[in-house]
Image (cartoon, rainbow, N blue to C red; front, side, top):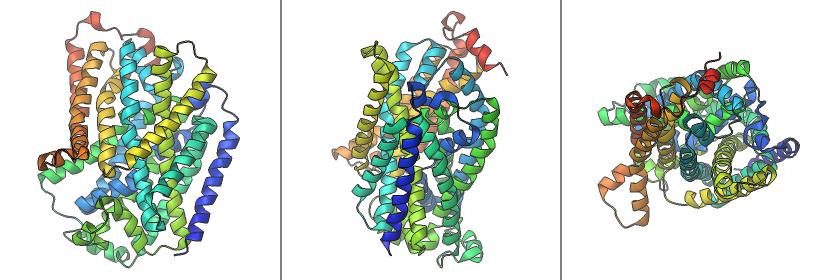
Length: 507
């Protein structure tokens, strides 16, 4: 393969991102511009920013390959769930109400939202720490997704790929934060939609799949649509629910609603986001579900560890894509990864600087200095993510630990705060702590395994059950919040705020 064409395509993409950063970076004048884009984003910018933050190389490589390996064509259910629950329903339920509250009270982060609603400074501090530290494994999984693609398609080690994504992400953040990120995401979203269509065409037409006739044959085979037992169905639906409803409690996803210009733009964003999710997530999982058309179980087992992270990269390589398309595919994954990484980094670092460092340690810091501090923390976050990415942890595991712990903690208190006046500080804390501790066991098991002190089979099994524990944590947190709120006395309703609900219910 002529890698010069591929590197030229990558170079053009990087130049385009630099141009966006330089032009839009000049418009970043305040901390609000840096963190929420001045709250003036239209439907297309908001929807594309949401979609590109949602789907990265983590989905295309780790989730699509791993779920295709385990469930065959049933894995497409994850893409459908992402489009219906993670995109359409999330925007329908959360976007308008979140926009109203956060713009009225000038809220820039999820910890600020929780503090405002529940009148608890300690909740803001706790949530800022959880968000910063547990977004790091998710960020690291983005690095790993791209590095496995680079090693197979470009024949380079994972280090150069990780360095490229780190440098481009750092550049976009340092030049202007949200304003730059949103405009870059719009371009990257177009690249992703264009690229996934080309990938689908060439993979389906490959000799391994054999076109529509081959798809029909595959669907009739035991590998294409395997008979799943109860544990397999449980794992599959845990994956669907975690990757769909998990976005409802992720601060970097919720923050996309903060900057929407008005309610009309929020309504228009529903259709745009849903279409993007159907195409990108549905297409990505569908490609992964065809893996048994390419390889036997023994051939997959021979891939570098963790094998599931190398299924899709090898599928793309063996599909014999034209050099230009290989470049486009790599740019697709690079664009998806950069957009997700910048979104995660911006959320994690702005939360830490605004919700912990400023109120606790630097109360009199000016906004200009705080913006500079946030940029510096972004570099620290990117470096920490890079270090974690170099551990031998599958992509799906790292992402499930982050999504499980963060969404398990904040999904219920955030969602119920928008709709239920009886929610109070006591019930919110009960839900947060329930979700946090229920989602922790797989991550703790993985940390023990990484130390090499313990190699027990039950510990390995527990470390692989991140999606299951994530769903249990979210459901349990929701139930505990509702139960405690219903049983709490009215005097504990510190968060009951007529002004807050007057805003939420205004329309």
